[in-house]
Amino acid sequence: MSTTHRVRILHLITKLPYGGAQDNTLLSIAGLDRAVYDVDIASSPGGDWDERARAVARQRLSLHQLQHQMAPARDLLAIAELVRLLRRERYDILHTHSSKAGLLGRIAGRLARVPL
Image (cartoon, rainbow, N blue to C red; front, side, top):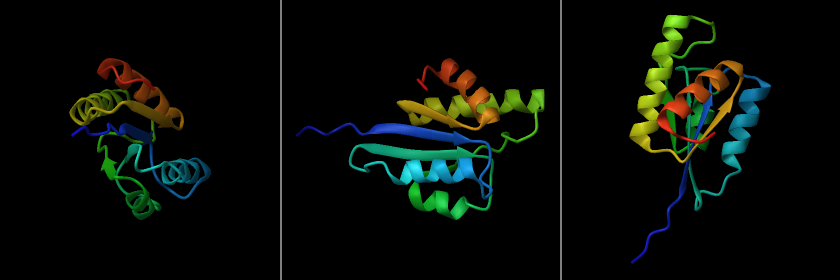
């Protein structure tokens, strides 16, 4: 019996308040075929659209070190936290949204060898 590999995607966004980038991200996730894709979303904990994220994604993951403000020491911890997540969950694709998540995600993706 053969099993079909579903593409594992992690969407990364800094935070989930009401906003255009967040709405676009959640609509993108909701529009993907669940028979083909396993889609998770990660951001800082909480947010106005936290429940909506839980409804559309397979998993809603919180990155406790990820924050909106630039903070070099904490940003390094966020990169390490994200690298561990990418390796543990074995994502096929990392899709970043927003400038901060984009920067940290690109670094973590490269370190974990997960394409963007």
